[in-house]
Amino acid sequence: MTHTPYSKDFPVSWDELHRNARALSWRLLEMGPWKGIVAITRGGLVPAAIIARELDIRLIDTICIVSYASKGAEAAQHQGQLNVLKGVEGDGEGMLLIDDLVDTGKTARAVREMLPKAHFATIYAKPAGKPLVDTFITEVSQDTWIRFPWDMEYAFSTPLADRDR
Ligand SMILES: O=P(O)(O)OC[C@H]1O[C@H](OP(=O)(O)OP(=O)(O)O)[C@H](O)[C@@H]1O
Ligand SMILES: O=c1[nH]c(=O)c2nc[nH]c2[nH]1
Ligand SMILES: [Mg+2]
Image 1 (cartoon, rainbow, N blue to C red):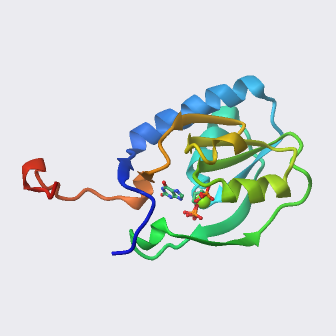
Image 2: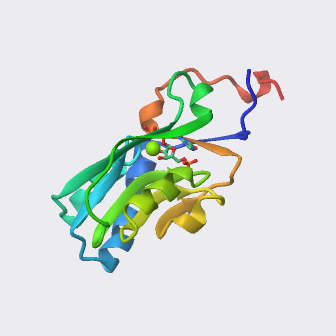
């Protein structure tokens, strides 16, 4: 087992994610109008779809970027080099830049440089990344790993009394 900075798990259900994405939509609606959305793949895709539906936005583009390993639950908690597979044209004026979360802020810093005039919004923010986000809904501690519903499935839960403590 390799060491990661994450000691807490924060599982998020589809219901909870939907509710938070709608709460974010309410905030963004008041700040609009918006010309379109740039979703940061892949984590930003689901929040972007919900926000686009709520704000009636039809123009949706992507920045395709990867920084955390994707093979296996533990490997996923290790950040590597940022790899931008696809960018977007322009400076982001009037556009919403949407991601699921900011953690260290490394991804946020890179996308803000690419689209300096865009409004950057996420559902979740950890303290190190928080200053880089214009609007977010829920803060979690830096040592928390958020488990998104698309990364989980229903499984047996070991009773608390049987777990190593
Ligand atoms: O603030 P940071 O430390 O840079 O981390 C945040 C980024 O990490 C995750 O993406 P990831 O690179 O794992 O790719 P994915 O969206 O395809 O899961 C998440 O969706 C954010 O985009
Ligand atoms: O699913 C995820 N949960 C997280 O807490 C996180 N931080 C960076 N990248 C992440 N991906
Ligand atoms: Mg991502």
